[in-house]
Length: 464
Ligand SMILES: *[C@@H]1O[C@H](CO)[C@@H](O)[C@H](O)[C@H]1NC(C)=O
Ligand SMILES: *[C@@H]1O[C@H](CO)[C@@H](O)[C@H](O)[C@H]1NC(C)=O
Image (cartoon, rainbow, N blue to C red; front, side, top):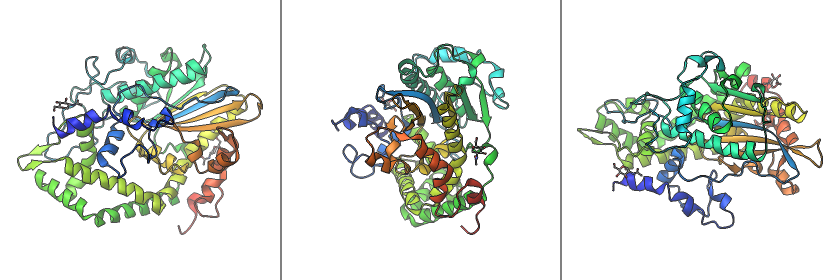
């Protein structure tokens, strides 16, 4: 067995070995590094496997967990698209042969796969805001196109949908049986992989996927900032963050040497190789158990992969410490968080529309939202990652509403910057809605270490 094969077999072992923490089987999902169950040193291969998120055993999750006197009011879901083909090819190499058609006799499989394909092929153009209406509703190329969602990506989201359905619809009856179009809010960026991921999740989620009740809005910005995208200070933070990234890379001589070796193998300048973002392609090889590319001068190998992946991990660590990315994130995530609390407040007032919202997005969407919420320790968004905002009403005190936040099934409510202290003072298993509202409306700007108290001022402040 080659090294890649033996590593992939590990995928199926991880949940078992991680469950050694007998205190709670629920802690087996790892969004935050767990000192009890994880390798003591950061292992780039282990991290890469988590990133692939290969569907295996049914997962446990903490979504929908609440004491009996709480009633579920609304749910908002922010997802990253599922497993996809690389965005760029590595020059002068054969690109990995991965089949993006959906077939029942290939793994990973989901019982709803055939139903999904047949339902999507009857899709209705009127369910999509332009330009989404001209997009394919499921992946269908025998050799994947660049960036195309794979069968793995579809299965990941069918599984997400099914899991959320069991919890939110079957158990908590979030939607009435005669639910209508305006009880869903659906939004996606204009990429086939995000649209198709959203459709797969919905197909797993809804009891009857009626095209007449589906309407996907198009979001032009990966930050989902709609009419509020203009923010010069955010861009200044981003430029400084990119400068930091660049300097860190220069300091890593092992990384430079690795890129040099790889560039020699494909016989192109190092700069050109780096620009083709080889780790993205190599992750695709890795997640799909396809051996790394070779030329007559040699092969890319596991050592190259580990060095680049390890650098990514170190980069994320420094990113947290230097806090430039936090500045970018607080401003970048404000508009979508503002929309999230706005919808929660309307639901808390008793409005019965948009009970379930789905935003189908990218790593560059989830990452700033996680960071802005204070979840900077959370892992980089894996394929088909999900971040969920639940709104609950206390039946004993109907005027009180509370929030739970979950990342990949783990309750992270009390890891957020606006609810850490609450946890220590209160026995309630949730965060008061007011905490989140106060954070989004004011405290997130205060966290920028500035005198600004609103988005507009914070975005236009001089001299960052
Ligand atoms: C990976 O591929 C090898 C052949 O290249 C095969 O023997 C092995 O079973 C595969 N492993 C998995 C986990 O699919
Ligand atoms: C925040 O939400 C309110 C209510 O929907 C809206 O009027 C306002 O423009 C939003 N502000 C930003 C900066 O997104």
